[in-house]
Image (cartoon, rainbow, N blue to C red; front, side, top):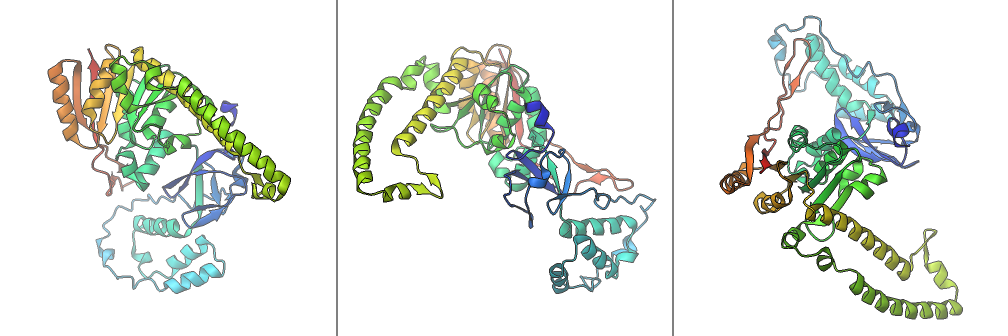
Length: 432
């Protein structure tokens, strides 16, 4: 079941690979080569291992002392004397030599060892500085990969580092504030409007733990590809029972008391279409029969790579099945909205929040919280004024989210030099 294999690495599931803090989400397909940060390996040896296991060259390794070496024997002395920049002259090993060493099959450790031995300035460095040098070289030449279980924090971090624009530059500390401010809990009905590739949606589903409903209000007719959500390995029940998608542009008609059937016409129109299609498929069927009498070559053509091509009828059946599924989901989402059963809503998107929030406030139950995230403060300021004046919400707060990260090591504790300065802005409030 879900619980039993949840803590072990299993094939055909997504995991997060971590090489020195560089992350990648990968589906472990048996015998399929994974290419990650210049490393190539197959995942089969990982099956059944605990999460957090470290692999080297596709094999499990326990030799991890070499990964976390911390010098802490009162080395905080002044190191300015040894900081004279030698402009790369201190290292006698050149790039060509390293390439030769690699070709001859030297391991990463051996290369790092050679680099240390041939560095003129290494002995003059303080232990801290030596440590830093070793760490930097190991990062470059060692091939350790740690396998993590996917969760909201890692998935957000992964996007944050690779393509922050795809998640509207949102950070995990901001997401945690959103989940708290929106009071996401077991059994809640939540509406989410996000253009963050699904990281906010995924975090909400993770927090609900399979109880409650998320109405995903999306731009366009069909829900977009929620890549981030698929990285979480949620069981099918989450997709079937907890996540319902409704197009955002249907909020207007819903508030205008239009019925679901008017907005999502199905039965009659598709009956008409189906009868037209079945006539066409009959014709195709006859034609195919005639052809198959002529020769068996068409049968061969219909097989590509040993897999049979779908016939038009099968394709149509799949399409109709999908459509039926989508309609069922839209109906459930619509019912939650129309029945005014919403406990909270979260807006975190690239659109202007004001019109969306004013619509959703009408569907929210009384005394319920809502949260709006924006990369910029101007749209939120405008919304803040609209809400204050209209009196539909109280406890309005507009805040800037900021997190400072520290390196904490003996005698070397300091804020990280490279940090993201803007974590975006949050507007929170309660409906009255």
